[in-house]
Length: 304
Image (tube, rainbow, N blue to C red; front, side, top):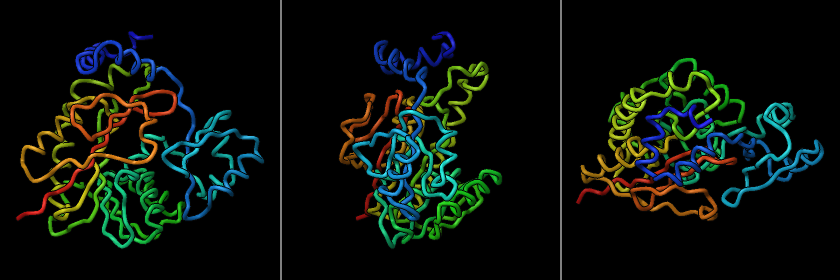
């Protein structure tokens, strides 16, 4: 099965992480991930969802870093999507890894928040639950079809504090400024590869990584421009390659106007972590519960 992984990627991973960790990453690619979702606290609560799962004989497990996150043990996504609570928007099917950036962001009520690449809306709607619909969230999406999906999910989840902007986030006017920014940057997806995809070698190429890094840096640069002085943002990708993660951050750090805020939250020690070249950032290893994911928290320095 290993030969299904593009050879250039295997080389990159071995150079970055060594052979032992790379074999664990490859094992993570092969594993069928469990279905996970979070409770939408704008419409429901944990007790209500637990009762519905028990009534439907659906077995679940909780995660140490979020009361709202559920891991499903005995059914697949189809059965979850048949639940009343899914139909009503009381739950949102979302990978555990992608629930982490909004938690790391720590959004606050009464603030201006920007989600720079927001579709399909998992993180936007999660931010809305974290602020109880009491903030102003600008959700940006360049693709018109994906923007429609974003609007649909925002509405279905009962989010009333978000405005969708169908535009390239790199072109947002610098007149705007925000208290918090989430940049879940478009990436190669090296943390979420489907190695059963027969066309993987055609899709996942060095050119894709190159294209990703160019847009990631441009988006991060724009994010820093739009972030208020002294305020914090989160940069994340579903990639585990340092070209798309640490190298992008280090390039931005060289400008001297930002600093890394070490990530800390309860339960993070239970995450399957990969070594990161920047202290205080997180790189999650793909396994049966998590997708490969990188997260950095950044503060814009105040000018003296």
